[in-house]
Length: 52
Length: 242
Length: 220
Image 1 (cartoon, chains in turn yellow, brown, orange):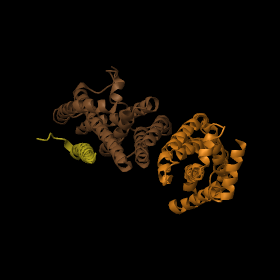
Image 2 (cartoon, rainbow over the protein chains, first blue to last red):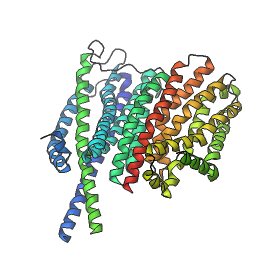
Image 3 (cartoon, chains in turn purple, green, red):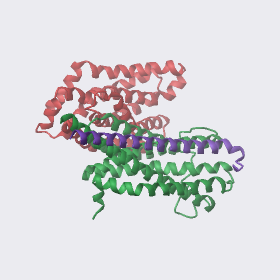
Image 4 (tube, rainbow over the protein chains, first blue to last red):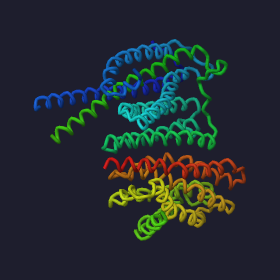
């Protein structure tokens, strides 16, 4: 299914893998951090509402 | 009704919350089209063979690396002139995306340069300028995380971004003067005679659009995180003093 | 302003730290290089311009965090901010004091150290000229970096990370001027660029540094 890349197979796959990998990490970290901050903020607001 | 209305964090949160899914959807679509088209459906180039496929990740990343710094510059200016907090936070949110883009451009370039030029790295003006740009990103991010006072951090990093921009451009010319390079000229040019053949050009455009939308989506997400974080800090402060 | 300059100079000389230390550091760097690359005089002569420039640059960097740190700690900086002279002038004087205590001695000592590296004789005038033109820019840019990190407790490392990229153009044109001068090539471009960078930095950077100092003082 992968097209024939000739002698550049390693080059192309490495470059693409690296790019997609780094972008995936970036997106994952951003999403994870967003969720974390959102949850903490909600907990904080909840607590402050209870305590008045 | 002006664009400055969205400088209000509440308004921004509402708008960005609505826009964000669309941004992610567009990112997915254009990246899928561009990458699949580029990877499976383009022919090999005459002198580059299949290695031409690297441009679908290398060129968009390199473009974004520069454009994101430009966006940070604009955001910093808006913060310094009009003091909209969202602007400063957006600049902060953009910086790490820009750094990753620069890193991708550098590393894919190295991987491509190995078989084509026979070396991972050359002190070529373009390569060197990107390395310098990467250093500027690192310094900018380090300064942000070093200063505790949020307002002061926004001020100082904005000034650093302004001064850094001038020196990044200056370095670009200094480096050009210092060493003539291996790197081919711009792949993209509005001049139809010069730019690469259409077979490569159209999927590349999709990839560039995809990277750009990815940046927009990430920027929205990360700016929202920064705003929430700021809100959280303020609440904690209030709780402690109450 | 003259009083401030004299005070800064006196502090630098009497404090023992900054004044001699930069020069000693420069000497040590130049001494270490032959251990790293081997003692052949041909190799040393070829890399001498770069080594001398790098050494001067690092020696400059070493004393940057002292520009504002002490004044910030004992509150002098707050007093200076309310003094009748503008902050821009204070910053410019500070940069000048830094140059007199660090940059100028480096320029004077560099030819002596160049002997150790077997710099060809036609290189000496270019060495002195390029350093004399370039080091003021290093001091002024360094003052900006010091102003950025003044409020931070461990600003030293961050300071280098921020300032070194800003030094790149100066380093390139300075070392290039020397290399071309030695080789007898046309020197007009690097010479004018180096002078241009220095004068532009002296003209513009005090405003940026002063703005940054005010931002830093506002928060505390």
